[in-house]
Image (cartoon, rainbow, N blue to C red; front, top):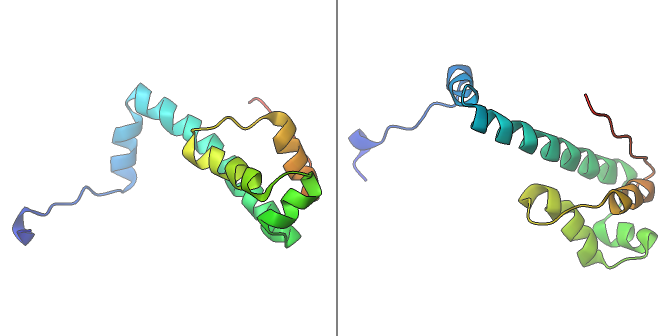
Length: 102
């Protein structure tokens, strides 16, 4: 690759504002932000509880692979995470689920 032709796109505040000025991009970003916030909260709760996926699965009475799919569902967007499973996961790590529409 010719170094002179390499021109990376800056990912600064101005660039972000330009992207978010497009309503479709803004909507997709906001939808993804909620999923990643929830995923971060699940993983943080798991870490705070000091539990592995296998231990959470045992508490929930499901297979370890199912816990992995629950966590990956938010990151990939390929699977739907049910409120029931989310509530079970939260309970397994000593937390509860609160949903707010703002």
